[in-house]
Amino acid sequence: MSDVYRDRERKAAKDHRCCECDTLIAKGSTYIYASGVWDGSGWSVKFCKRCNEVRGKACKFARYDPDECPQIPGLAQWLVDSFDDLHDLKTNAEIIEAGGKILIELLAKGQRAY
Ligand SMILES: [Zn+2]
Image 1: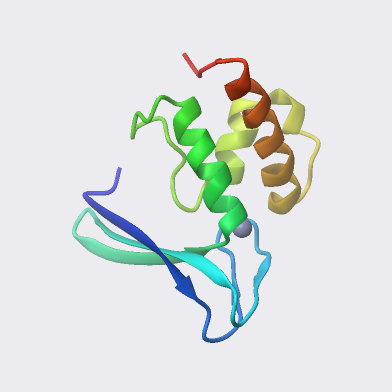
Image 2 (image 1 turned 60 degrees about the horizontal axis):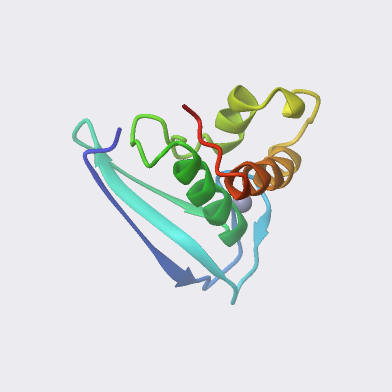
């Protein structure tokens, strides 16, 4: 887990790609800029608002245990590891879209990872 972590919304000054789902973050749209320090090395990534939402639900599902939350990037892998229904999906964008729906259903039922 990251020693230091912070994220905030930014407005794209140019086109970017989401580090999780590889979807275009178009110039002028808002995205999440996350940065931190891990084992003494600085890192930063950009991800789209949908991935940020799904990540938030994933962390909630994992009871906000930092060791159980998805790594960044690593949301699609976390979802595939967590839900068998996603094994047949090919792209990270499909996995994150479908995984987000599963998380919404489970959280609505009050279910958690453990
Ligand atoms: Zn994304």
